[in-house]
Length: 350
Image 1 (tube, rainbow, N blue to C red):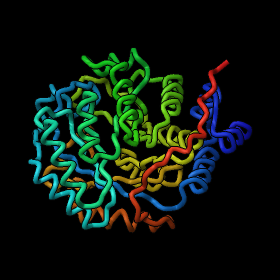
Image 2 (image 1 turned 90 degrees about the vertical axis):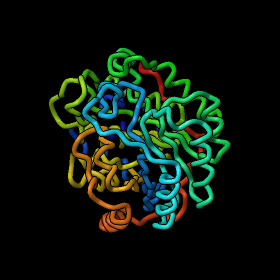
Image 3 (image 1 turned 30 degrees about the vertical axis):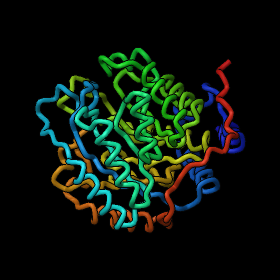
Image 4 (image 1 turned 60 degrees about the horizontal axis):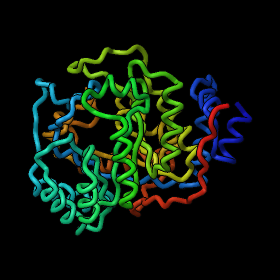
């Protein structure tokens, strides 16, 4: 354990066997402490806030693990008008956010023209814009980049092709990877990540996911623990993936020391102090919800989401006090990631 952590801290490179050892270790505290040390050294104590606007829960896809899936007839669907989205973004900018994250299901209502206008209007508020709206064509990605989008978040979910095909019917892992490649070619900051704890997922699979994320030089890695939704066809797994999710996040911090890693909302759904714990295990980003209160409960990717009854203003200042409670401060810049170019590809396991 000591030699693996020494290598990770100083070289930021591990092979698959070493990653598997960290994923399976009983000495989690040592891993988390190492990740926190690397986080402090490379990205500092400032926490970057991203205002999350969940503007539509319509989705053309039918992913087995997601409550927004097309065939879920029990969900109350909604979509915000362009001006409503712009207004929420303006309010978020007034609350001091430097980044706006526009997130939705894959909703065909929002055409290239609609999304481009939304993006260009929000850019007038002097904020960075992250899009998290799924798989698009190269031309769509290009149009949104031209309109002013800075970042794109597209989680790979899993690189296990058999598992991907089982859980994402009608979709293609290869196409997902092509989308990520196109996003990078267009000059976006690239965000990706995985779901930890999916039924049928193995530690070997997760190790390969980590290797993949490092190999494509992501600028942001979002790790979401799987939370079962009863209105999906997936089976309910045993156990709680909270600690394993922290391990994945910590390993990514060790391997890519200066990227942005969010303490995800799902972490706090599984643990009342989940985001604060994540911030002390390698994370440096939090994405408070800036969606109108009445819509939050309907953006139910998984049940039990936190803060669904809170206002955007309350969320902004609540997270501020939580961050201060662990002697960290809120960053006042946009939190861009500039690729350092020193990463080595993870070694193949011999």
